[in-house]
Amino acid sequence: MKLPPLSLYMHLPWCVKKCPYCDFNSHTAANGAPTDRYVRALLQDLATEAPHAKGRRIESVFMGGGTPSLFSPEEIAQLLDGVRANFDVVEDVEITMEANPGTVEYGSPAGYREAGVTRLSIGAQSFDDATLRSLGRIHTSDDIVRAVENIRAGGFTNFNIDLMHGLPEQTVDKSQADLAAAIALGPTHLSWYQLTLEPNTVFHARPPANLPNEELAFDIYERGQSLLAASGYRQYEISAYARDGRTCRHNLNYWSFGDYLAVGAGAHGKLTTDKGVFRYQKPANPQQYMLNEESGLVMAPLNAVPEHDLVFEFMLNSLRLNAGFHESMFVERTGLTRSALEKAATGALRKKLLMRTEDGVWRPTELGARFLNDLQAEFVPERRH
Image 1 (cartoon, one colour):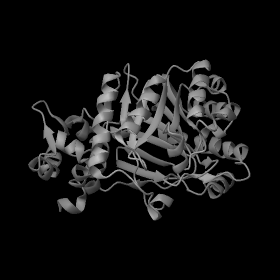
Image 2: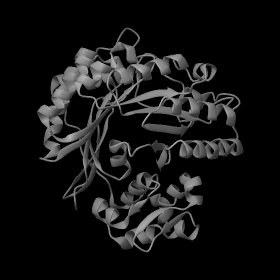
Image 3: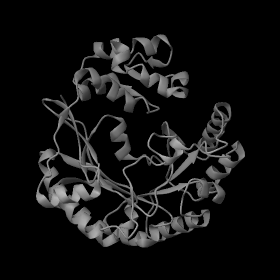
C-alpha cells in the first residue's frame, strides 16, 4: 500500500466560553487554562509520536481547539520547536493556528508569525452582532475587523475566515451581508458552512427559534455560491473556498484520506502501514491527558479499520471535494481494488448521485452535491450488505 502524505494535528482544548452549537472537545477556562503544564504535556506527546512518522516528512501542522490563541506566542514557539526537534518537516510546511477575534489580543499576530505560524484561521461566524450574541460568541463585528487589521500588520498574507449560514433569524440578505463583509477584508480562504444541531450540544437540546427552513437554506446557499464565485473564491470542498490557489493543504490531506498524527487531549490520528489503515485517539479530558503524559502513559492503541469500513471512510471524506478523486487514489490509500469501489458505488450511480468519468475520476453529481449526506449514506457498510 502506497503511503499518503503525513500531517500533524495538535489540539489545544480551552475556550473562554463554550458556544452552544459546538461539539468539539473544548473546555471553559474559568480560572485560566494551565497552559504551561499543557505545553509540557504536548512536548512529551510529540516525542512519543515521533516513531509513528518513521522517517516520513510532515507536510502540514494544524493547531485547533478550543482556542489556540489563548496560548502565548512564546508557548506556540515552544510547541513548534518541539515539532521540528522530533520530525522531519518539509521546507514550505503549512502551519495553521485557529484564533478567535475576542482572544487574538492575548498574543500579537506578529508574535505568532515569529513563532513559526504561517496561516491563521479566524472564527468570525457572523458579522451581525445580534446573531453573534445568539450564537454565544464573545466578540463583535468590530473585533473581527480589528483582528484582521492586526493580522495583516503582523505580516500574515494567508488567512482564513470562518463563517456560518443557516443561522437563527437569517435571511438571504443577512447572509449576503455576512459574506460581503468577510470578502471586503480580503482573506485568501473562506470556510462557509451551515449550522448543524449536533448531539450533546445546547442547541441540540434546545434548538434556537426561527432557523431557516429547507427552502430558504438552499436559497441562502445558492446566492452565497454566486457571490463567492463572482468575488474570485473557487469552491474546492463543500464548505471551503480559496482565492489565488490558497487552498488549505492540511484539510485537503484529511479529505484525500491522507495520514495525520495526533497530539493533545482528544486528538484523533490516522496511520497507514504495510498492515493496513489504523486510527487512534488521545484521552479527551485535558486533566487526564496531562496526568497520562506526566506519568508516561502516553501510547494510544492503534485500532485497525476493518476492510468493510474502508470504502465508507474514504468516501465520507473524498466526496466532499468538488474535483472528486481518481480511482487510483482509492486503490493506493485503501488497499482495495477498483472492483470493490465499483461494487460499493452501484446504488449511488443508479440514483444519479455519483458519476465516473472515462478517465477514472469519481465525483458527486449536482444532485449528489446538494444531497451529500444521502450520497455518503450509500456507502454505509450496513446498507451495502
